[in-house]
Image 1 (tube, helix red, strand yellow):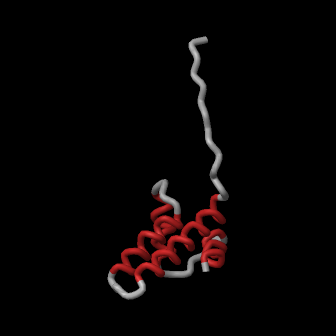
Image 2: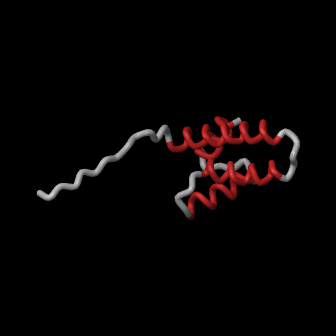
Image 3: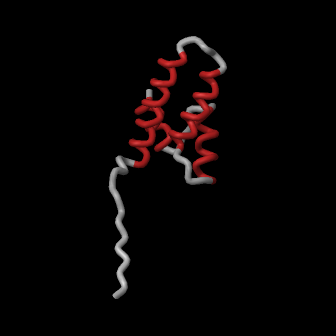
Length: 85
């Protein structure tokens, strides 16, 4: 599910619903689309108390897959050295 949704977003398309809101938020801020989708889906999940834990785990994994496909694996660190010379 996460791979398919990420490919839809990467192709500048929309699956409707939360992906439209995620696209608007990410274009106007520094927040990633996967994080916006995660936040929206968590709000929806908490309205229904059944199977909350499994739903949150599934949504979290989906949002991380979306972010990884869209932005790549960003585990690189940047170090700036400032000297007096």
